[in-house]
Length: 340
Image 1: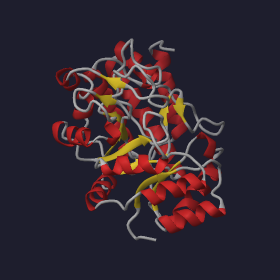
Image 2: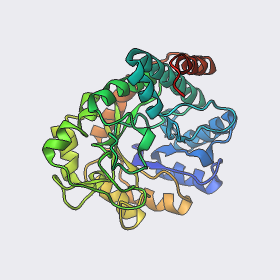
Image 3: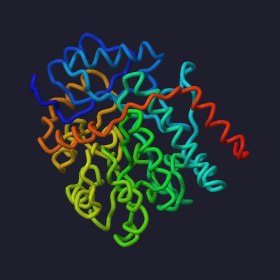
């Protein structure tokens, strides 16, 4: 096993790591693990799963990510965990009372971050900074704060800072913006034909405003004004747009390579992400055979990626929050504003 982790997140089909999966992770040393709803039943089981992965790779701080935005995208949604509101609901509150909306969102983000940190989860892959329009694919919907890039940036800042304060890594997505995509990149390849000027003034703007966020997830969307063929997540052109034009210097991880906007075998998809110059390929689920194939295609993290990861970790705080008390306080804020 290389002492430098592979530039790869792996996934699991079950709530436990099998003997074969443990051996694979031990021998290949993927950077991190992505866990979904299928993997998380209750707190102690989730902690054991995370500890087992970290034992396999021999790194106590190996990142373990999930999807925990609030609303319909929250993989900690079983009985033991409180349910959090969507970004669309916080946006509605903020449009009625901007300061109250920001305060509620900051507290909710702290509560969610503290909940994940207590479990050993490194990140919930949040916030979503995509704009939403009438034509936007339903895959975004209430995951977005709305169509106004400045409004999105202001609310996104509360999420980023609230998560950092509680030791949970924010990951802004889906850079450089999924909002103009009319197709779901889980199922097909969306193409956005907006001009460079339009994208810079709208979709890109929240990501530029929050470019100090330590991690960002790259969209599987084609932006034809820059690259007419390849989605951003596998396009060297779009890597340069994100790094140079948008000025983003943090960790860049692809959206899940199982999504059908990408084409070809899983090993090919891993190589496309890494060959395009992105830091990490996300393989968020799959069985041991698929994880093995992805690991064989992956290369070790670059020195630049390792430095970006370390810089992000250095910004994590240790604020302690009573999760359920904070959640009740957020709900009281909504009730006071009569927002359902």
